[in-house]
Image (cartoon, helix red, strand yellow):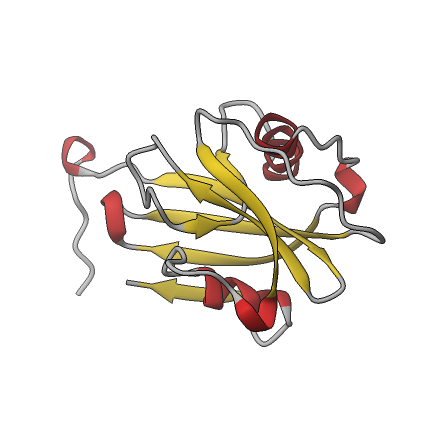
Length: 148
């Protein structure tokens, strides 16, 4: 049986975009700080989808805000969706961009306290709990994952 909730009881959930910025087998990660969510964990850059923008526009904006990187929307390739239950639930929309050469990592100190390129085979700890799922999506093993 399907239960329909009254509009007043429906919970709104987040739509968050993330960029898996890679160069060969390395990935650029930020150590989250001051956000109130997963602070101290390493994560790809990203943020909430804002009203009136497409997910691809949001990931281009977040790359500029968090890394100072100017991406063309056409190089941000959608690679998957992760549904998460934590913090009221929501969707992580994942995009990937492969660089020919690594850039010097930069970061916005309001969201992170460090940025670094890491080999996928030797990632730092702690990571956001869904990052390995994101790599599975990037590698094409699925397009959708549900994370607790």
